[in-house]
Image 1 (cartoon, rainbow over the protein chains, first blue to last red):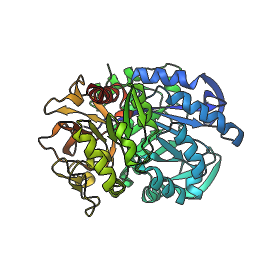
Image 2: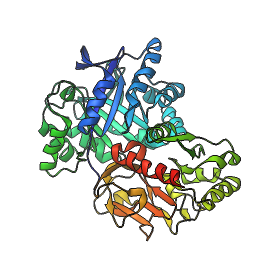
Image 3: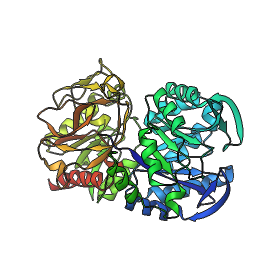
Image 4: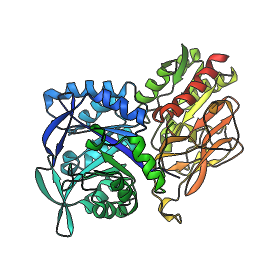
Length: 253
Length: 206
């Protein structure tokens, strides 16, 4: 049986892992390669490196960070943040990324999803959707949650799949950094609408939040950052808890 | 260092495979022409994407691969590279596979299956042994490895391990010096590295 994946996210700025609350107020959480090593040792299933202040001059520093993380990591590694063009994606892949995560650029230019899927395969293309509740809809935001769009997360996820996306990384802006739990309703709505895996993100604060997102939330994977960075819980303890609740996970020795 | 030829037929990115093979003691090279294959002690056919891409492994490459197999050099197919070892695939009915393993690849049923499972099959899933063989030396039963694919190979007498996602398919196969893995050993942690090490050691043995 396919395991539910636990993914750790490293939000990186200037070569350091940072993590904010509601996308603001960043504070330092350490060296990316060192954290990656720790998570790998604890049995993390996958890593995401997110360049949270992607600017042109920092892109080269980012390639160095990806290389340092990928060097001794033999699990899937995704890279996102500021990937706007095919060249940006190629730089991340050449540095050692297995997947690239597109956000703003995918929405303004869905053909980029198709171009990258044709070049690297759909399994290498993740479309990241940041959404906020708006009545009974899930409004899509871009530019790190700063700019509203007229799109709905469910409908955009379906279009992304049709364009060639291999996975959806769905972040609840309302929940991000709050530790009150994932937005299970939103995750389930998107998960039902697509046949590709949905990674839930935003709001993880306790072990039972992960149980919820894999059951009522219909999530295929769950992503968290701060809950792991500050060693509030280990990956191993989380997986043991999930296993006790009958959720299939990959246990490592 | 054991020279291992990694066949690049433009189906996906080879960085991770190279890195993992280097980590287990291989000297990886990507031959530009079939003639450059000669110094290989082992051959790896990697690949992600559409079965039609395998047609780039044309007559001259196949002849070079057959010559090495004739010299008892081992061959490992990874993911699409494993599917290519079979007679063909429903993904590209007009494209013949290498045909060294009997059977034909087919698409996972996914949401039309009773459990309404998602396809592509992406993530960590369980290896269940049907028999033992050298490629799987030292890998514990029920180890988990990382998959990402929609098409699968049937379970046959060549199957070493099988995996289930709605239906059961071959996840590790071996027939003499020819082996294949449906998952990505380069992305499957210590279990994957062990399988690659088994392959590189078998290539060094000859």
